[in-house]
Length: 231
Image (cartoon, rainbow, N blue to C red; front, side, top):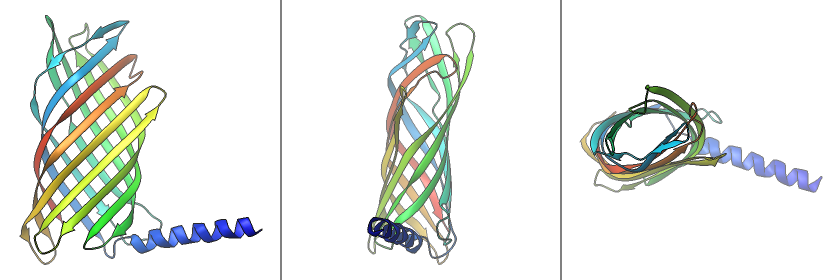
C-alpha cells in the first residue's frame, strides 16, 4: 500500500509539473530554412547489390510550424518538412535519391520561462522517396517513431537565442539520428510577434532497413540559414 501511495504521489507530481510547464497562452512558431547538405557514406542495397554513390553538395529547403497551448496534459504539436534529395555517381552509374522527410512531433515543455526552455516528447518520422539509376526507378516509404528532445537558452537583453533539438531511435536494424544546433536573432521584435534570422548546423544519419525491399543508408550534414516567426 505504501509503495502504491508513493507511485500515486509521484505520478501526480509529474502531471502537475507538466501542466505547470505548459505555455501560458496560445502560441504559434513557424520558420523556413535552407540546408547546405553534404552527403557521404551513403549506400543503397537492392537485390543483393550495394551501390555507394559520391553525392554532390546541394541547398535543400525545409520548414516547420508548431502550436503551443496552455491546456494541461495535452501535448504541443509541431510539423516539419525537409527535402533531402541527393544526386551523385557510383562509377559510371548516376543515382538520384529523391527523398522527402516529414516529422510529426508531440511534445511537452518541462521548462518554459524567459531564460530557457526544455521540451521532450515523440517524433514520428516519415520518409518518402524515389531511387533512380539502379534499373527501374523504385519508390519507397518508411515510418519510424523516435524520441525527441529540444532546448533553448535566451541571452537577456540581446534578442539572441541558442537552440538545439534531436530525434533518435534504433530498432530492428533501422537507426535514425537527426540533430541540429543553432542561433537566432530577433531582427523585428514587436508587441505580439517577433521575426528572427536563424543559422546553425544539422547532422542526420539514417539507416532505413527494408524500405520497400531496399536498405538505404545516408549521412547528411551541413550549415543551414533561415527565417522564423513567433506569435
